[in-house]
Image (cartoon, rainbow, N blue to C red):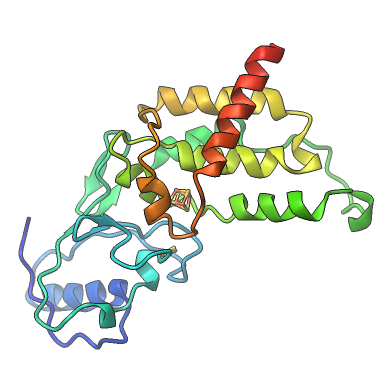
Length: 229
Ligand code: SF4
Ligand code: FES
């Protein structure tokens, strides 16, 4: 751990803006800035996550690091910041980890194969409101990796469960439904993520409040696909 002073921090700054200020001060002193990853800064790209005081994505529930504000800390607080802690997410530098394992899980099956053409008339694709809502609840996953970092087993089950489920719940996802779940679960194992033993730490830190019911759905999809051969 390296200790940095964070001076002149406005309570309305985001956590990343606080790091920006610290980095500016480091650069002015001729020191190396702290490397961290970010893109949208509005909670939708999933790139900014880090451990804050030992909690993935910090102390606020359902909040990505870029959406966390300094008013939730006290003046003079000592804040411990670390990169994601998981064997499957090797640290590249400072707070940046390699989340390529997630990309490879998606590449293994997290897509639909379709002949593209003009967009179909929306009402010609029948889907129940309940399935549509459930699919959207899963599709909000931003691939941040907090679930893996928080899990004592380093499992990627919440992420993979969300990705498997949102496709399995829509008509467009049906043709590859069986092979998809097998390939994605196998990829998850290959990438060195652990097994889910239902600690539910993932659910507690997920910035999009994705529930472990999607892990159960993935397990059902997986078993059904295995049985169907
Ligand atoms: S399930 Fe939640 S915590 Fe895990 S990658 Fe998706 S958004 Fe992040
Ligand atoms: S920078 Fe995109 S989610 Fe935080």
